[in-house]
Structure formats: C-alpha cells, structure tokens
Length: 209
Image (tube, rainbow, N blue to C red; front, side, top):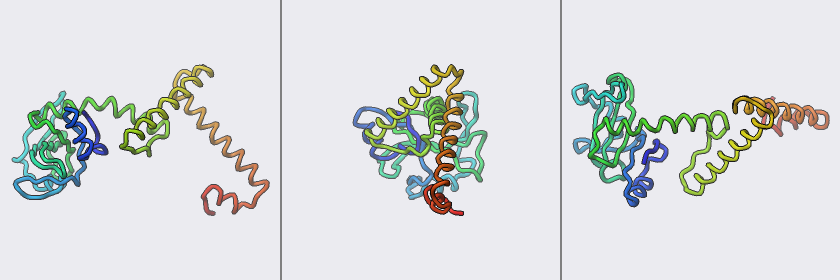
C-alpha cells in the first residue's frame, strides 16, 4: 500500500499488516527513530549525518543521495526509513523521508514504487485546487467514502454542464461557475445594502471596515 505522510501512522500500518500488505509512505520529519541506540527525530537524524554516511542511487534517471535506517519508528516495532536528497546531499536541506515495512526492499525499489503515486498526486491536486476540496483531511473509512461520493457528484455535475453548454473542457465549466457564483454574491450584497445598514452587511459577511 502507498500513502502520504498524512496516513502514515501505527493504526494504518497495523491494518495493512493484518491484511498481509506492506506499507510504503511519506514520513513526517518529527517521527521518532533510534539510530545507533539513540532516540532522535528524523530531522535530528538528518542533521547528524555526514556525507560518508550516504550512498548514491539512480531512480528512473534521477540521482539521489540516500541513507537507510532500520529499526523502531515511533510506535512501529520495525521498519526501514529512507532519507533521500535529490541531486545530492545538502546539509542545509531536510531530506524526503519514506517509511517501508518491507525491510527486504532496497532503496531504489522503494523510491520507484513510491514514484507511482505521482499520477495520484496530480489528480488530487486537480480535485483540491480546482474543485475546492483542499481542506478535506480525513482518515476514517466512512469519511473517505463520503469524500469520494462528493468528488464524483461534483465531477458528474461538471460533466453534465459541460455537455449541456457545449464547453470543450471542465476548466471552462469551472470558470463559468465561479463567475456565476460571484455574480450571485454581488447581487445578493447589492440587494441587502438597500435594506440593512452597511455595518450589519459587513457583519453578515464576517468582515470589518
């Protein structure tokens, strides 16, 4: 299973383990590891490394400097953590951190597998930025199902409008909907200003003058 750092936690990883899945996911830099018998955050570990502690790998034509740790990770008994710097190690930059519960995999394989998430990320970016779901952060199964229902309903509505108005792209539909929304909002404000004081109007919109 592949996941980003939002889903990387003991509950998700344990659920994967019970179902016979390995987990590869992003790891937050405040996660706790125990390199060389010492407790440290991923950030502290990265800051303590020397260039000779890392080795170089090539993943789909890109070069990475990587460091691999295997052991306890926060509440997870055993996993490997891969710290990677694209285009070489830089002591002033924090690495991209991955956790993998299959400790038999080498860093190239782990990074290659995780790279398959890129298509997922680009679709998420479209849904979040263009359809306004950027603040929807959830973990429960019920919430995830509701999220996808909302996504598909929104997408279906846009497709129906695109076909009805004979637009070429969904982007054109979104632009039309935003313009219509602001138009309705302005007409509402104009109508309200004829009937209520300006201060009350600002209060209704949660604004101050």
